[in-house]
Length: 121
Image (cartoon, rainbow, N blue to C red; front, side, top):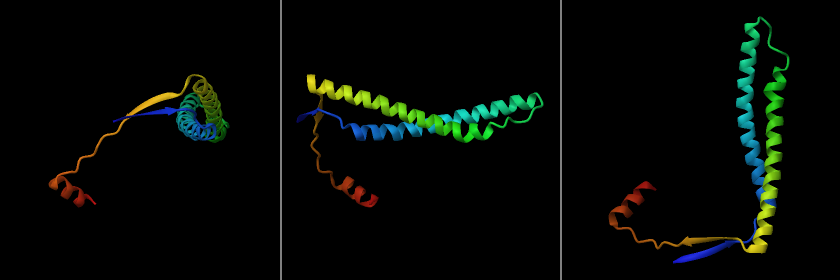
């Protein structure tokens, strides 16, 4: 049995909230790895010339990842807002995305599989 579902609109606030959380987390991970790589490379480069580590290291290791991840969260929220808004306008004009889902009937398991499931729980 096939059921057709239509996505008529997407709620803007939950989509933006999810985009902010995901974009901030991804931006924090990527910028932390990138900042650690740059800090390691710059300290190796400075030590090869006999100079001390520059004083921008605390800025680089703490503030830069937070700033970058905040910028990623803001841009992700903005792009999500534009995508959801354009989808909602398009869905109102032309209809939403139609999903065709198949509902499978579940068969009763035989004796051996039922006893195996009981041992798992």
